[in-house]
Length: 105
Image 1 (spheres, rainbow, N blue to C red):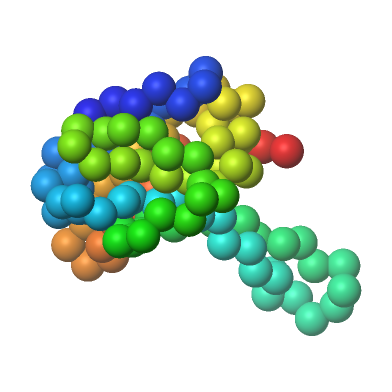
Image 2 (cartoon, helix red, strand yellow):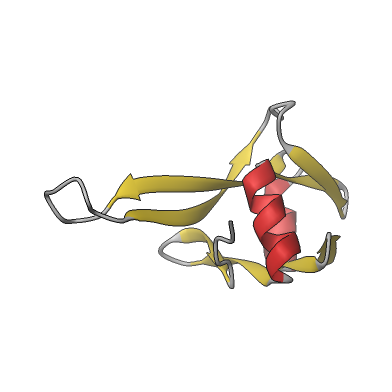
């Protein structure tokens, strides 16, 4: 299923939607310091997809085949400004994986 997010899109595999049920698929940014030990180290930004039963009112939600995809405003801005095509897939070992996302300021 493909969802229009501003000028970009999110494509979700059918097996992911089946596994969510009546819960919400939430896309969140995770920031962590890089591997160096000084204060000049770059921050590493990654995106994670998780399934939650309650929806935080601060998130932006889109309907997706009987369920909802919710995301932080920073995720929405990055997908919209970068005109990105983001894919959410389910893997055997890693669970939910998000591909095609690049943080845009």
